[in-house]
Length: 496
Picture: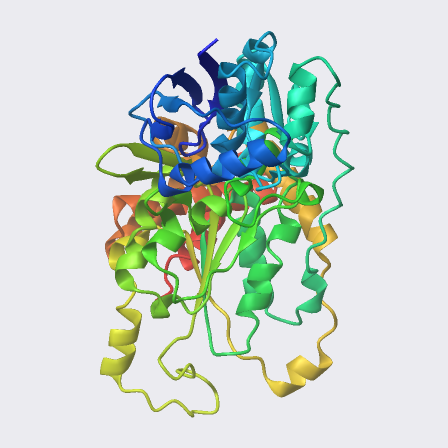
């Protein structure tokens, strides 16, 4: 047999398209040619595979070897094709039985001694291989991640020798053990925050309806503390959401920790982050912070310090919940349904409006500082809340705040009402559904009309007021949206 076909998987966004590794041996001068749009990492597999085959006790064929990765127009990256390439060479040279190849898919990076190293995207590949009716053979170090998919058909191996022994009928590869029970999420507790009752109320509303939130105030008033405690009052993730989060985490360079399966993401990139780091990108596109925060919280501290062009890239994912990265050869989609929490100072020095009167910023400096955030992005943020400095006596005498567990109970009750009524969070309501569900009474409609005229609100801002009012009503278990709900919602649109 001089031709062998091995099935493997590539990664394209959150998809794992099938790749056929074709290996052909022909007479001629010894050479190894690799075609099929391979990236540099894949081209380097020639030397890794040669050394791994020889050190594993097999013979590298002294013939002309041609390897094709099909389909040819799909870019291939990473070292995950090392194992299927090695198996294809051994099968084409007759050193490996091809009887069981069609029932399996193979991924894994090879060390020079034939050991298998972990790969990215194991969970996505396990999902795709199982849907195709095949068993995925992968490195033991990645098998725990892949086993998070309940229906996965998997076989784990430590080395090229072990895979070859299985295919030749000399041994069996064991399936990975079910992943250990995930740890209960351990979030910071809201009781650590003293005072700031208005900001705590806004945080509860944001959690109940999954609304975006901008916190503004002097340094040290608790803006970051509020943001870090938001995941702890959000409803628990469903299994579907947890699997979606795990799928995106498995694509990141840091990999996936199965023990954090039920923990909501909390991402807080530094303001020096590039556009590609924030929304995703690269030659072989990887998910950015907006995707790694899927079903969790994306916290942008010191918001005006980010590049304005970088911040404006958030506008599309805030609306659509997805990021599309376009390259000359292809487009890649990543999910980006996150909850944005941002924080900023009121002025460059941070103390504008502070009781001490220590701010010396001019009106022009303040206007230029706030102008770093574009109007279209600001219009897409549901809530804008002032977090003032607390007087010394209030800070010293304030009792511990309400714990997260108690707040989460109210949030879960309100969120359950939303799921039973429309199937999604209030922040995602749109069109006719929003008009039917969040239509205020006559007094509330009149108040909303006055707000539109007085504050020159856009249609988008008006719809966000309706969504906020609907969430406030849900927290009170009110079937109707009245003027009081509209009035509180309007307060959260007046900041800045």
